[in-house]
Image 1 (cartoon, rainbow, N blue to C red):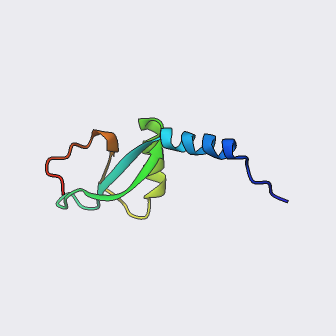
Image 2 (image 1 turned 45 degrees about the vertical axis):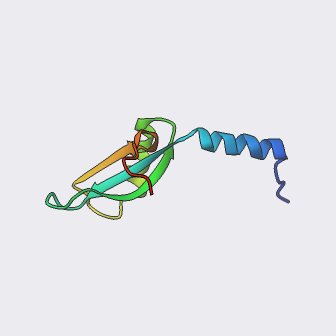
Amino acid sequence: MSQIGTPSDIATQRDAITESHVWLVYARRKYEEPLYEIGNVLADDVELAKVYARSIFDEFSWVEMVIIPRETIVTVIAS
């Protein structure tokens, strides 16, 4: 029988997730193509984010993949 965590356990888990940084993942398959967003990963540091991005988005032979911390994005024109 599985046991559901207490509300404080659930809140602690949620807080741990929200403390992770969101990293946007961009890649290209050919040098002449532009980078385009292929997804995102949650990780506390850049090294872990690189490992996650490489392992999660391994369906193609990318020639370049970059990650960008979402909190560094600056809005120029808001909708």
